[in-house]
Length: 324
Image (cartoon, rainbow, N blue to C red; front, side, top):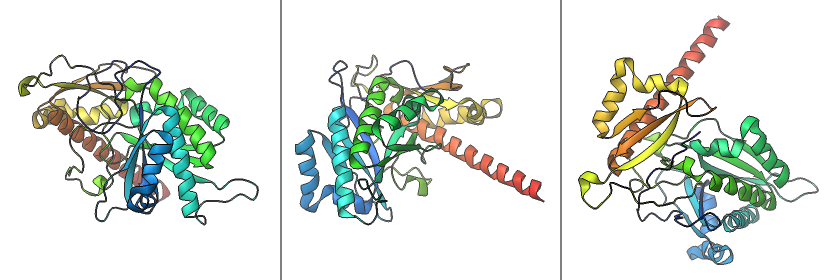
């Protein structure tokens, strides 16, 4: 799904995974969506729980700030694959202990619960595998159950993979998922992160600094050929995959919509003429400053969301007409 070619990464200071080193010492950043209540348990009184988690596993871990009126926050864990898996296993144990009545209990087994991982749309193929074989293998070997959402989250290119099971089985599944993400790290380049609350406000309010990208992938920094300190040459290249049946709605009649997106964002956007792999998706290459690229991505995904809503409405109308 995704891009085969690595693209220059931003050398920003966001506390996400950075791995300029060879495979074997790669660092994984894996995000999860948690309720505000669960976030409080993860952090603990005066940050005690999260501090202990860091000490026990060697990971960096943190939770996004509270947004008034929004009941979800994002947990971010960065470290080795084993460290991240162990951290999530410990977090699940904490959550089941703090709220013993909420997990589904089986008479003869450990308490079971679920964690909602945020995974780049472009990396879902790496986790699911051809004909679902990879996700089935992970479920079989870990004992956890995995449910992948079909749609991207609002104003982002991330989807949810819910991992259900005991703390041990979830930890085993997350280790396998992490290895899949590390293998195909290039495919996660250019991910637009989901921010809770963004779907309720279509105005494009940003809740985080620009150009912070991760997604359950590895971030590797490579020098961008055109990125010295002078602003005019501070260009970045991002590749994103778009389903072929959605490309027309982005281009618009006689190219009007893509022309408008180019004009409003200031980025150059080129579109592959043919799908780049068996998924049938086509590659969009966006070149511009970090701010211009973010604007372009926002406009592209707003256009996709609008088209998806239009199609859902059309399908519902057709079903109603058939029933009549």
